[in-house]
Length: 326
Image (cartoon, rainbow, N blue to C red; front, side, top):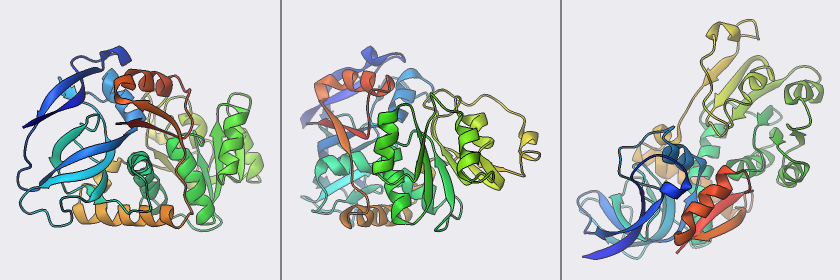
């Protein structure tokens, strides 16, 4: 039995709570695989878990996505074999490690044309983008969409996805440089939310009408403005809390604001079904291998510097995707 360096938390708090320990890695049981990681993706959900906003049972392993080589396959697993390149985003957490045994259902064969770093960076963020555009509410060519944090990991994928499908994406970001990056990746308009009232600007861009859909992963700071950016019968997709949790609000406000709709989806509901997960991953991989979506890996950290990676992410000092290398 081998050991693998693994990142855990024993109590909630800041990045200093991330500890690296050696853990034994055994053989996979029925429906499981053992994977040796080549790269690990970093995501804001892991900040929420570390701080306790999304509480885990402690002590807890950390990490939601990674890529690597399948080392062993348990009974009943038919879509993967030893030696396969693979990538995943999956519950329960545990991707911040050199190797692990885990359920196989949400582990996906990774095409040769996609690097391990790209595979690690794309699963959570790319599959999130997939469900936002294809599985949450109908969005057609020519529709207007507002996307917050458009220069972030999900945002840059969303800008490219919208461009590929002919959707008019308005992106918000916190600096002129980040706005420029969003435009380079396909946003048709951008708004610096630090210098402009984004809801007012959205109305100007859309001739007073508003957008059909808002995709909001920021949360508390953008929630009210997001509702005010929607056209009649528009859909608000709240999918994250980068600025903190949205406080309770009066649902009755949705009526006078234009009979609005609101939803709070999670990726792990969408990929909970094996067949659906594999199909979503296949469509995501096609978007990348076709060149319609390129992964922007702007920061890399070794596993030993995972706390520094969290500090950079939480401090809004990153653009695109961040990958932990092994």
